[in-house]
Image (cartoon, rainbow, N blue to C red):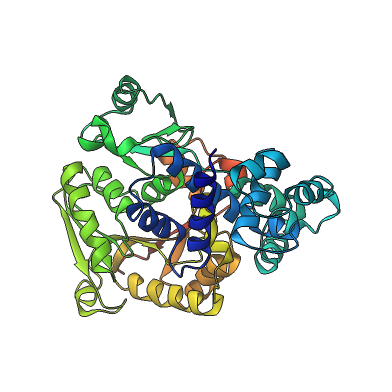
Length: 420
């Protein structure tokens, strides 16, 4: 690797660490302003940055002075096996020999567990209180690994085996996901946006866990359904396919820019039953006019996002106010529940393992809404023929990266009592 490549990676890492924006957004911005970088140079820089973010706390523990250059060097030594000479030839400006010695003499077994798995204390302690020490370590280690590429087959245009064959023909072999009947998995990153399968709408990139959330809704043809926090619309697209492009599907979100990105995805997928609605807040009049009219409502609530650390490792180093987040989740859930008609379904989900964002929110909601009751998740999984074994009596879907090889998700299905 040339000194230029090393310098670019260090510069990119510095930009990401100093940016208020998500890492993927900052990386995209950097590459746009450095179009002269080749594909290999970009791949090395992005991979190095994400690795430094994943293992940041451990790497910092092994450094005398924490700088982007030193973080990058520590990653290359500890994770890639680089020598002092290799560092020097790449342009490392510090004492390479001393750095290599310090890292190789570190006894990881003597480090606090939170340091070893590179989690902030507050996250580690919260998870350990819920899951226990060994499970927390296993989950953290799984979240520190790059994610595979999961895609959802668009059943409006293709069957799973047909989509798999189309991808394989373009040089991207994949295997069926174990739980989602519409999922395919590639174990290496690939430029799928350029494939015929993607451009013709046969597939959408979507984690298997996210695919299962749509299946918990069990939408039927010709129903009125809402994706209350639609975001980029991945689950909206999945719901539309499950509804066979019938009925009415509302995609609500407070950010117009996100919903605008959904428009070309709908066209590619062949969906024309989706109404994109920009709202100012959860009790926007455009929401309120649907009170008691919807068959099913999905609330994929804003959350800490800790279940997506494989893809977004910078999240764990950002400030989070759990009090503010859970208060917002509670308000959104309350507003969304008002849309559900008697006999209708409400699904609440987060991509977080934290009890504060999941069980606690639902317990508070149910304590003041006796008209809603839980639909046991195992009943839904059995109806959908999803071979996912959850503990007997488990009421919510809990997906953990180290167990299920998906992003970490929580979801629970509630039903509103029918009219008397």
